[in-house]
Image (cartoon, rainbow, N blue to C red; front, side):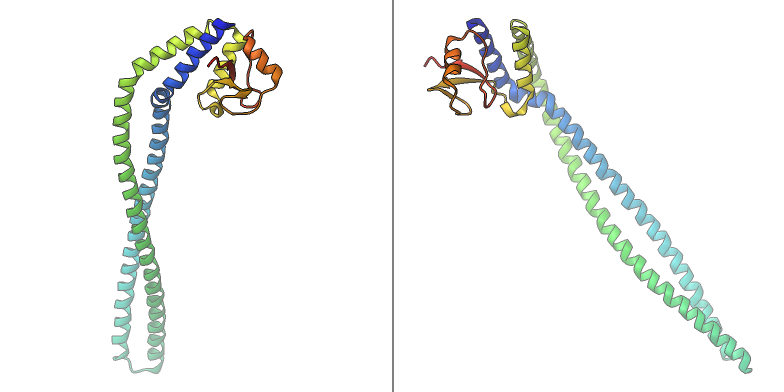
Length: 237
């Protein structure tokens, strides 16, 4: 059992000392992928806003054409009014002028509404574009730093991983399985072993049952803290 504890101490040291390297080599690339997905989302939003702006501009151009056509028509009818002499023709022209004015009013209101919509879309587009460009620049810098750091740390990290794998093979299957599970579980914060001090778990500081303390001291088998789950060892200091 003493030899198993020595192996466990070595593995625990590797896990603790390589955690920062593991985060950079294994987790940072995944974080960058998530940010790239977010960046692509911003790009899509920006492109959608740009497309809607183009559509709004086309609609505004169409409204302007209709307004100009109806204003010309109104002027034409108003000029004809000056020339007609019959009451019936006068009434007909006035009705036409009334209808054209109504259409012009509707188109003017529609143009105002569409103009406000275009203004809002333009502001949203500029904001989305700025956010995209800023994130793209930041992500590019971060990617370069991460790639540089990975290149620097990966050889040492892979060597430690290989050493840990070899050490795990020297443990009984149930103990190596326990270690692997603990390493993957975030609650241990990459500290898988805890000393027993004055009957307390050295990490979670909970009072341990006297029988468990005695078993840990005898070191005949691997024991875990019933509270935090870490592997216990007798603190000889």
